[in-house]
Amino acid sequence: GENVEQHPSTLSVQEGDSAVIKCTYSDSASNYFPWYKQELGKGPQLIIDIRSNVGEKKDQRIAVTLNKTAKHFSLHITETQPEDSAVYFCAAEPNTPLVFGKGTRLSVIA
Amino acid sequence: GAGVSQTPSNKVTEKGKYVELRCDPISGHTALYWYRQSLGQGPEFLIYFQGTGAADDSGLPNDRFFAVRPEGSVSTLKIQRTERGDSAVYLCASSSAGGVEQYFGPGTRLTVT
Image 1 (tube, rainbow over the protein chains, first blue to last red):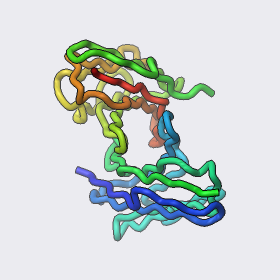
Image 2 (cartoon, one colour):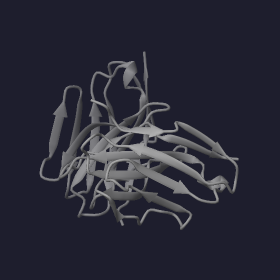
Image 3 (cartoon, rainbow over the protein chains, first blue to last red):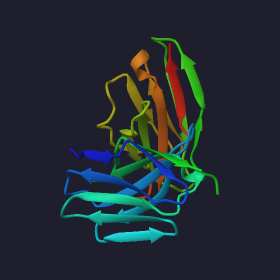
């Protein structure tokens, strides 16, 4: 079945700097790759996603890139703010249920 | 509009007891998913409903776990003879017909003592 690896597990950045989180997947049948932000005590919130026919997608300060050949995708957050501090999860969808990475705890230091 | 809601938000039960966790999906969403999230891990798939029927229950860990969605809206996850290893946050998500985006509820934190 699908296996999603996510790195790094923790990431600290200064406010205003950029943050990059990387994921790899194993199943070439996966064609949908969402990213979720989870704050303490809350459910995961969908922040951006990308389909397999697109290489890059941007929404204000966040962007996602996808390399199908290498089976990896990345989340980029620019001009980080303290409210970006949370755990971020990548996921891949080979059929319908999502397969998640183990998460990255992002800390933005003011 | 209203998002996915889950009740209760917290549930503490004794080992061996039976529990029910409820999920109300976004109105009109036909697909409903249950995931389980252990501390420090990503959500893990349990079961997926399309309408009233379970389209995929391959993630249920054993026969103590069961879920229903009798009218194609609200779903209940049922756990029999709870064990301490069942302690986790149980998350519910829903998506629209033909949609791939899954929207999550706040979860139910289950603690088995």
